[in-house]
Length: 272
Image 1 (cartoon, rainbow, N blue to C red):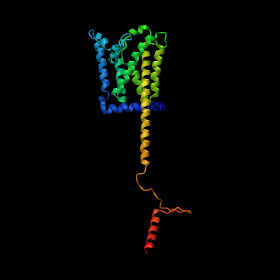
Image 2: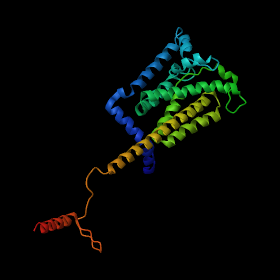
Image 3: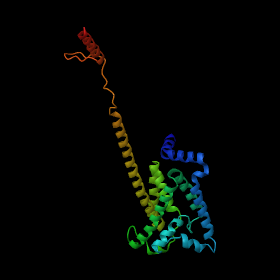
Image 4: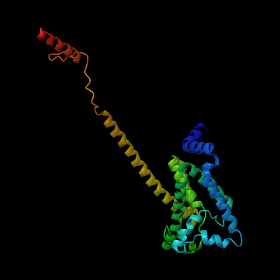
């Protein structure tokens, strides 16, 4: 039990402390964007269940692979908050509240939105590529998937979970996310599972870019510290330190005090 608790603290301890301190200090203000996303998702769900609102939501927030590219790209941001029609809405709300909330605290609002949009966009673009490749290709999709409505926060949730796990060193959690999506694709092979793999690929690229930036930043800091240390070691105009001890030997070197007294004695002898 102690070993399990120790591993859990090593895996999730830094993440837990970060989230707990942010909520204790800022309360709901720490997840203001997340709460707004939850409210938006709930409102969209209510609207699309109305006879007058279903078409409005479909025209502004639903994405299909058969749609023209630019209108689909314009609808992609809102599609994050359009719950899938074949899934319970409480699942989407829970995903947004939990994963988006942790990501907002740990990564910041703008980075959270960037990763969420990049993961969703990767899934949207993959659907088009997969249909072009065809069902016979390992990465391909059947032509019927072009009619599937592609909405919901699941791809963004996968990307954010993977990025946060990497950022806080939760390597086991990151591996579990990738393994779960891979198993889903192997068992079902549906559009959603393969879009989640595309979201993982896009997030991995973002992780690589972030790791490269962090490495360059560390190198720059080390170089600056070494340069400051080198400048600090340069002389500042003070005389060199001289020993007060006499060094024995055939060429005996005297201290400056002994030399000064000797010179004074010689000068006095000349005056006499």
